[in-house]
Length: 435
Image (tube, rainbow, N blue to C red):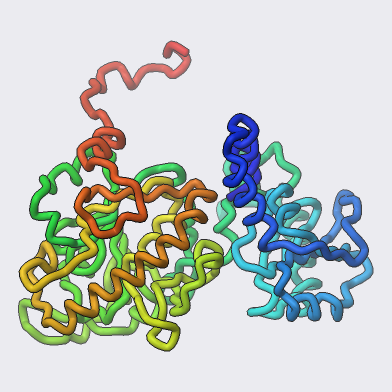
């Protein structure tokens, strides 16, 4: 939810005065994560200035106390602002409270104030590094001594926002969300901005549809659990132990697998040998990790730096890979999610669309989880609407009635890419092409 989105939303409300309650809800959501607090107030930013900004919420008493103890170097400007002002400036805030470091009107780092307690520790070194980078940027050399391409270098430093006075990124892109086995972070956030994805939920209703439509050009799919064995998706995730899922999924380099960080050092199960083997999840190709949490709070769901998958039994229960899948889709930048095979009901004769046994107790647990998840989705729905994140159910008979129904064939037609064009004539001088 960046500044441009807020502006578009407010403009839309101006054009639709009858949406009074929705506008009030939207404004309340913006204010909910903000407070009026100021020490010296913002100061004018000058060339070479160093600034530390703390973005707080009304409940962040610990961060406020940390802030009041800070003694920054004399050349560092210190301020506290509200969330709305942070959005207006284009700051990419993911968790609250947050600390934004700026040097020469460029954002160089964002940290979580409470979890890392980094405010005092790295101010001096961080700005020292920033000065050194700025000093050397124009003299950047390749190993062979040739000058680097300035266009590439500028793009690297400004991320496409050259007309802005500060570095702007996606609102969710500030705190690392995805990691390699070695602990290095990988930025996958917003790579698919505004696009649509089909989330395969593995219900038996999938046996009644033509699954080949999910392989049409332009159709992006997200698989969960063992459904990925039969439908080879673009993305895939799980939350349970890796030995519960087919090795064919783990070993497929064409499937981007996003799984809990702890899975990297866990073993695989080889269904051909019918045993657990020495090969680990981290040995497999195209695997990324994320950090989980087990307490569902609707207001925090889309903004926290860990990914929720429901409630632990100590918090009421109701965990599911589907919950974390929706957060992953949002982080990747998808605007529209189409649920496929989302039946939300299980019986002894109708379990999954793939072959699997479920005892009566497990079936009852699944149906109980569906009820709890339905309540979670009801709490998330108005937040999704405010974020412009749309979820649709393609199963007209689904027991999950929180999301609007959209016919699968219509969704496919709307998102598939036409590949009927002829390539002849493409390799001509670009200057001769009609504008």
